[in-house]
Length: 421
Ligand SMILES: Cc1ncc(COP(=O)(O)O)c(C=O)c1O
Image (cartoon, rainbow, N blue to C red; front, side, top):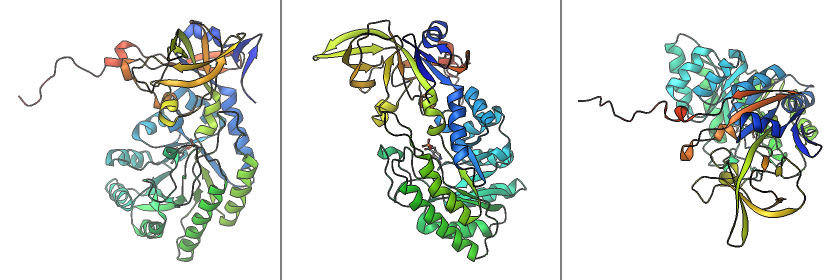
């Protein structure tokens, strides 16, 4: 059920009119519905109820502190992929045993931080990384809990090649034919304990068969390791990837997902970990923007807005579709290119899109922008990043202030302080 609805022709987020938010906070602004996040969490949690499970929100999707708090209070744990995300998770109140730490290129510094924090699992993506974790844990006088992220090397159907991660040759995970060797090494090394075998095969998975194929490879590996005496495994981790409709497609088939996952977890007798990012947050967020100008170019109608690829990179980077609607209902429709102010021809929100026939000054709402929106935002063209607003019922709060020009230059100096003269 959407938490963004029209009341007397004006779009609302839960009980709050979007035009009121634009007047109070300005545009561009991300607006999130707390109820939508809680609802998605509850639906996912419910289908996995037959098995012991942990839902670790992949905060790369959106790591704003105010949202992390909502997600934690809903009952989720967290998946981080950098020292910065670990820092955010801790600030948002996640306990060490609620945090798993993944990522293909963790630095020694980041690994030391994860070991010192005592996170629940550090997910290993290569043999050299495993040896480094063992050495660093030894130096710290402790034992690190590790999982092996396996690349099951299966066929993955997604919306874009950039979000496939489980096919042969992808940079992620330990290639399937090396996974047994690396897991056996993890079992043997003195300063790590092998607690998980996992995968993350991609994002926006359009075919659940990929989970079936990937899980069966994990099951084979786990069976072999157990037969050889590995008795420390606690978790099977099947990553994220659940589908989110952007363009009116059917939503993720949660019952179908559970029908693949639940029996496998029951056969394995392990606790399940999943790492959903997009699923929990994408539909809970919109990007609110204003039309600055309207013009004709090459026979096309163009709307120039005050937001662009620096705020929402997905249309440009992934050729992604985001539904756009006027905040105030307008009679008549027209085909527009909806573009941003950035000096790049790739700076667009939508091309040749049929939307309301709006005029300069109109407010636009860009839907399904909660995931990989603000977390991929940049300061390109020295544009301050957008404000973020959380709505909960009829209440709203600014959870991230709009950046200022001073924020843009805070770490820079006009005059170099030479170090070697
Ligand atoms: C290791 C890992 N886990 C989970 C996710 C979350 O994926 P999604 O947002 O599709 O659920 C990602 C996203 O790339 C990832 O790399």
